[in-house]
Each structure stands twice: as C-alpha cells, then as structure tokens.
Image (tube, rainbow, N blue to C red; front, side):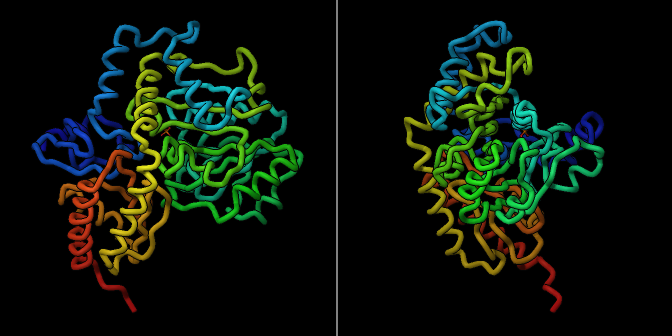
Length: 395
Ligand SMILES: *Cc1c(COP(=O)(O)O)cnc(C)c1O
C-alpha cells in the first residue's frame, strides 16, 4: 500500500492514516484507487449536497474558470447573487448582511469578532459544542479534549449546560453573545432540547445579547429546512454557514439579521480569498439546484424514509435515532461505532462515527429509493457482522 507510506511520510499526523484513497465520484458513489465502489452516506461530512460530479457544479466551475479570483477590492456578480440568495433563504432580508469567509471556523471567527463589537466581554457557548479549530473558534467549542492541548485560550468564554436554567443563570449585561448549534453534529447528532431556541431567544433579547446560530452542519437543507433554526420560528441575530452551501468548494459565511448587520465597521475584518467568484458561482449553482429540485423537501422526506427503514432492520445494536432530515445520528447500544464504520467501509459504504456510540449519516440531498435500498441492505449486513464479532456485554 505505497500511498499509505507516502501519506505517513508526507502528511502531518493530525487525522491518522486513511484506509482508502479516493480517485473519483459520481452521484452518491465514490471510487478508490483499486477501482472499488462505495456508497457515500457521509457526503464529505455534510458538504457534498449534490453528491459528486453534478452537472450544475461542473457547469459553474467551468463557466467561472475565466475569473477565479479578484480580491475584495472588487465586486463580482456571483458574490452579489449569492449574498442575495443567502439573505432571502435565511429570512435575513433587506436588513441583513453577508460576510464571506473560507470555512466554518472562519465564519465563526467573524461571528466572535462581531460579538466583540458589542463592547461586552463575555461569550456563552454550550457543552460538547463544536465551532471550529482556530483559537477563537476553539475557545467557544465545548469539547474539552479539543480545547485542553491549546490552553490558555481566549478568556471570558463560559461553556454552559444545554438547559434554559443554565442559560438563565449565566446570562447578564456583560454577555455579548450566545453561540448554539440547532443540532450538535460533532457531539453525536444531539438536537437541542424541545423549546430551547425559543426560550434562548427570549432571554437573549431581554438581556440585549446576540443569539448566534451555527448552521455550518445543519444549513443548506440538511435538516429538512433551509436552516435548522427555522424549525423553531425564532429570528437569530446571526447565523454562520459553510459545509453544504458550497457543495465541495471551500466557503464560509456570516449572515447577520437586523441591527447586528452594522456592528462590523470598514476595515475591522477582511479576507483575501473569502467570497471569490469561483466559490460563489459554485455555491450559487448548488443552492439554485437545491431550490429548483426541491431538495429541502427531499431531505425531510428521505430522512423520514431512511429512519423508518433503519428502525425496521430491528437490530439490537441500534438503540436510538437522532437528528432531522438527512442529518441522522444512529445511537448504538454498545460503544462499537468505530467498528461499524470500518466494517461498513469493507462492505463499500461510507459513514462516520462522531463518538464511540454514534454512527452519523449525512448523505447527499439527492438520494432516492435506490440509494436508501442499497444503504439498508448493506447496513443490515454490517450491523450483523459487528454484532457477531462484538464482545458480549459484561452483566
Ligand atoms: C464543521 C463545523 C465547523 C467548522 O467548520 P470547518 O469548515 O471545518 O472550519 C464549525 N461548526 C460546526 C457546527 C461544524 O459542523
């Protein structure tokens, strides 16, 4: 396996050595360097909204090839069109504004700077949350294992329990912002408690605190709405976007609502690549296709269909199904998620394990009956193989 040797010799050891080298994709499938086919039910971690090699993406990439990048000294039509679309589908509308970045981490970094502009020192975020890897975004990330190797981080961040009581106890006139994910993807697809966002909106409004919703994993139709917060009917002060809005090109965005749109002043934030015409043209094509093919509704319907079919497998390994639309966390009755992922890969199925007892599914939004049937056939076989292999629980 010489590519693995190359990987270990050349790549910094931050991800571990991959088991497979991928060479091409088509729809909901990818192929490795040995020609083996895989059903892709992870979609590059909720990124490949239209799957692989979609004609709309290929078309946008090729037609924008004559103007890839110009710097933010200049306006471009793809950037303005994408901003218009994001303001429309988010509901931020004419009072809203967009700042483009290159990743989810950077979108949250911009949001942290937005929060700083309130003049208030403290930021609240939730236990087990994930907001990115830069020092700023990591400082508001609630996963201790990710934070601890890099302390001291940014001060004045309080990481609180995901309860309204904890928020009510922590909030006050010195708090600038509360960051929340509608569903904590990296924590194992953990939705917020029923009514949390509504109550958080009330409390943050009372105390003049920005409510910033991290929609990086839940956005772009993933949960059966354009954005996860829309399930609750609240209006946030800002949302952060990345992953699925780009369909595979690196893009991030901070979208502000209402008064928050005026917090960042000229010269206070910037980026070289952010919002360049290449990524904006592709993102626009992705969102246009999601809209014209009604893939937000497909996400809701196929998500429900998939959940029902997973339940119908009736495996004792599956103890719980979490998430909405096509962001699904399969809770396992034993801590064997890594084995499930490895056996699935052997069986030609790509899924992942955000923690040891959760398998995450985030397939392309274009999946239909054929993909679901193939997934269920393969996944049943995988669960059986793992069950037969797993050590029996000590009683
Ligand atoms: C992936 C993710 C991020 C970080 O995005 P990157 O593009 O990896 O920097 C932040 N927040 C959430 C909820 C995510 O899922």
